[in-house]
Image (cartoon, rainbow, N blue to C red; front, side):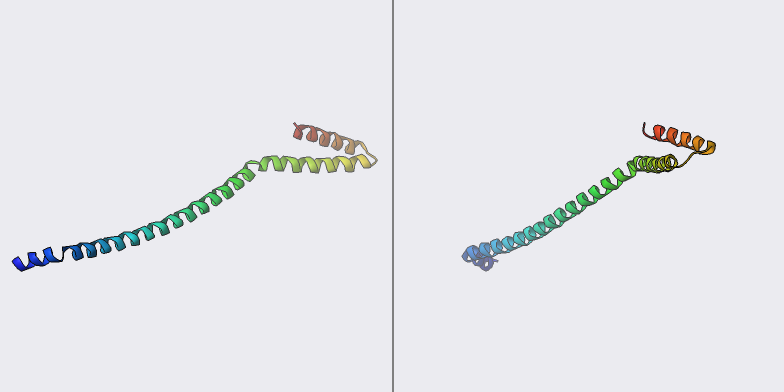
Length: 109
């Protein structure tokens, strides 16, 4: 036991330097892992943000679908109106023309 204590007293600087090197390498390897995880986290955040913007765009499209349908109805009724206006109109065509005009006014509100 006495020899062991003398050995530690004689080589304490070497032992401390070896322990310091071991702890230094362990901390360096952990910091490398932390940097890798940070890069991975940043990539995931960018992916999530881009997916959120895609989802928001799709939701905006879904929310505006009623407006798109309304505009398409107006286009169809306007085409009917133009077609009927170009023809010689009989009584039935005049009634249809009134209905088409009423629908156009209703859709433009």
